[in-house]
Image 1 (cartoon, rainbow, N blue to C red):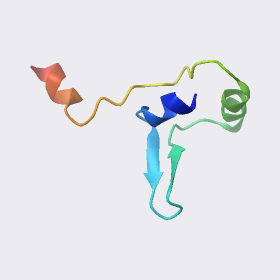
Image 2: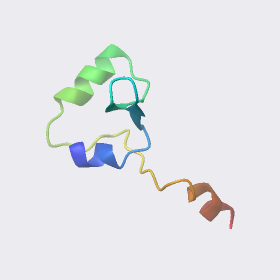
Image 3: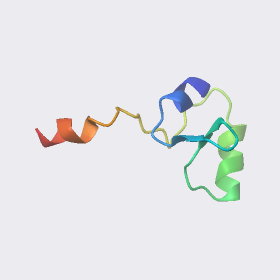
Amino acid sequence: MENLCEKCWYNTYDEDSEEYFCDLLLDEDEYVRLMQEKNKTCKYFRPDNGEYEIVRRQN
């Protein structure tokens, strides 16, 4: 799941802690379930195609 997180829309950099984290709004139960699932793909994964993704859809 680490490789998916690096390419995910919800992966956000925090300048204070100098770390990346998942910015998806989950309740505590959902977060625990997500972290306990090993070798499964994240059902919330949304690929980050860069800032030009919206432009590609408009054309």
